[in-house]
Amino acid sequence: MRRTVLAIVCAAVLPTPACDFVGGQDTAPPSASTSLTTSASRPTTPEVLLPPDNSRPVSVPSGSTPAQLRHKTCEDLLPRFESVRKTSGQSGVDQAADAAIANFTDTPDWPVLSEPQHHAVIDGARDAATGSCP
Image (cartoon, rainbow, N blue to C red):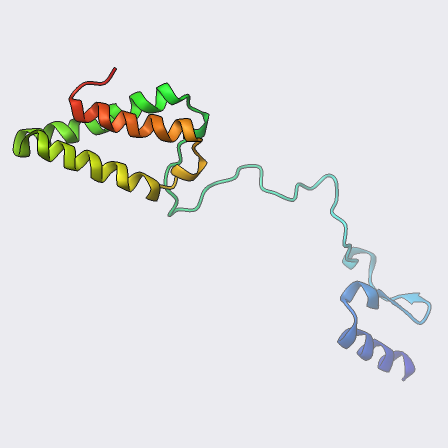
């Protein structure tokens, strides 16, 4: 009776591993013992880490030099600015460049860029607005 009451109180109040030792006997079978430590032979993380299905590709702009960022930004914006130039002229391109520069701060990559990289990205947009990428 005392062992039953003790087991019920133990199960209700204490975590499961603490209830394995009741009344001087180990009541848990050896195969069912629980441990709070992890085995060295079992990895705690999967071997292959996969991104969630809804994730976007991530670049590593902070590892790029300012010159690389300036050129890439120019190359990325040049086709769009050229199409704007055909329909709206240089004033339309200037407006599109200003809008692009204003939106840079909202991109996920912006916070990880250094100050020189910020200037390089802005300069790349201005280069694209002129119609050529150095």
